[in-house]
Image (cartoon, rainbow, N blue to C red):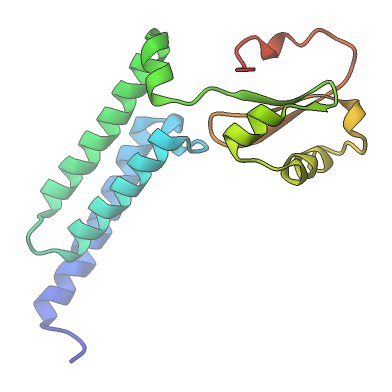
Length: 167
């Protein structure tokens, strides 16, 4: 059998459409932070949002209002955690990973690479993507909180942006 009943299919169509619109509106109100590159905390929230949306769409046990309330609550929790992260260094360190230096002045930091589970070839790929052909021309490569790699070319200047980077 393709479906249980026509009213169930109509419910899925209506609830899915309204839940999707509600999710978009809530995320829009939550701000760009909810849509930025993901760190571990943001990934958890994203997966939870997807789960809530799917459950709301397909389960007769969960009403549209309950699903939208759960989505709004997660957005509020994410906003609260982000807010506390701004005002409390301790809290920020608890919920977000710190950027880490992987290469400095053309020298690989093997201990940091092992800790972050990255290989030389992955770091070299990020250097090539930055348009740099020689490792010696790189001042620093940093793995950021969201897992992306930042490459800073060597220019002979003091690297003040490395002050907050774990060595």
